[in-house]
Image 1 (tube, rainbow, N blue to C red):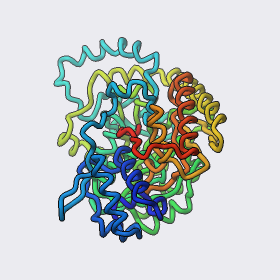
Image 2 (image 1 turned 135 degrees about the horizontal axis):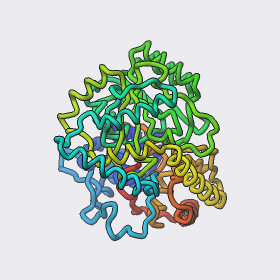
Image 3 (image 1 turned 90 degrees about the horizontal axis):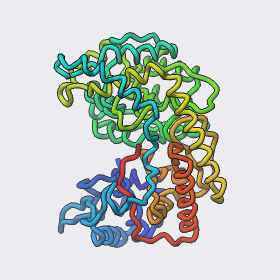
Image 4 (image 1 turned 60 degrees about the vertical axis):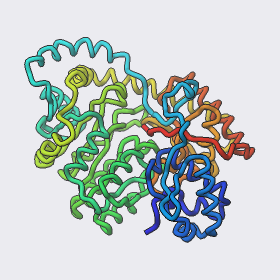
Length: 467
């Protein structure tokens, strides 16, 4: 098995590269968060063999990274990832003028303030309790269950746990049912932090392709049948980052196949409510079988600062989750839960408002893409972002150039397991139109820099999360 460094680089992306180019690629991986501080890199000899490059090329590559502070080296020992002493963290004053496209999320809905005010009597009534909420408020669990029933998946409040966001929910699920060394099927591309969570819990990842036109469902089902993974992580509605939606008939087929081979499906519905003009509403995958654990969230439809998520699962799984949860948290904040009850009571108004904002954001991105030669924006009927085809395998180079233009954006490979999809770029449709227009102007300038080969060899990507 090859090293994680070469997996992230993608051997085909660096074939024949000189030391300076190879060092730039590794630097981008470090600053983009795909290689972590303290992580051990392969030895010079091992990396030379993997990349089919000379030992001297690898020695010079590591030497360049060390000179810039991106690796530390011990004589006769290991090479490990570091960050330069003067490296600026996200949110520092140096980046006040930067536009951050690594975050595909809107500011709060106008209804959040009124919902907060309405929630206060509910919160006041809870002052006589312990304040801990391991399972979640009964009225919020019932509201979430009702939402599933309305969408065609019979659900009781006993099948719901309220969590501190969707990613927290994924980590709770993996802590309860995870098995180190087992296989996990994942979409390629997909949400980067889900990949990291699966890696952290010891899974070996099996990618299955997704594009703007949808899933290769034959490949997905054959992978389930042939590899029998322990879990599969899927985003079937307005897939992040492609925007695709899995058809109803395919949902049922995948759930059945997974049940037959013993695969537990973890279905991420964080983006499900972000419809602009899809024109149809598929049933939840949970309606097709009991082997589906569903994750949802208020963060994308209300506000990222509202850390409210949930898990829907059969009662035996809920019991396992509740048994594990106290080992790392004792519940979800009550104020946010009270607010969520109020917001869920008026979902039509909330989703209508979100749909209009995403419509305006999409139009702004379309206008910007139209002015960049070679870029193509696919139909984007909903979701958080547009999955652009930039016409050439230069996504990482473009991300480096964009940083010099005070524009932070993750390259296509950030959403993959193996350094592929260099022709792709995720652009959020969640910013206000005027902010998006400025971001697209900077992106156009960065593209001119890349096409003119004027990118500085020491440009830096912001080391940031991808949301």
